[in-house]
Image 1 (spheres, rainbow, N blue to C red):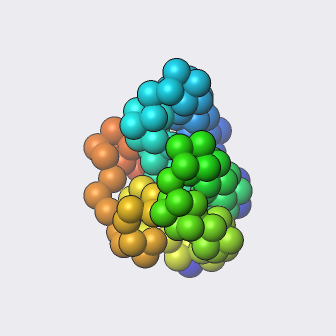
Image 2 (image 1 turned 90 degrees about the vertical axis):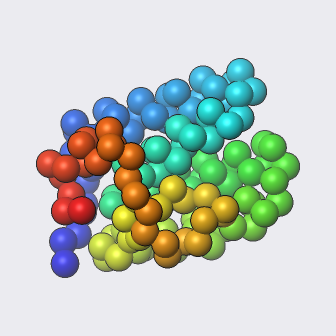
Length: 123
């Protein structure tokens, strides 16, 4: 079992970019596009506990912002458990992190993100 302590800088830049694009679209009230970038940040940050937890925090806040009670209810347990699962290396690879998908379901990683992740994680 490999424990991922610190997100590598090369990957951190891509993760931060996704969050930046998320914030831009959120500010412009382009909610579906904002959400898609938050899901992409989730995929990139999932192996690292801090980044994984941070994305679930953003997802919870997003749920409140759009008043989606299902998302809010789904994010609370993910927020509490997601980072721990990252820390011990037991994540459902590629899962987009939203309440609309089962929390333990592995999913196909988009090709561009798979390429970004390739040097850093074993998928």
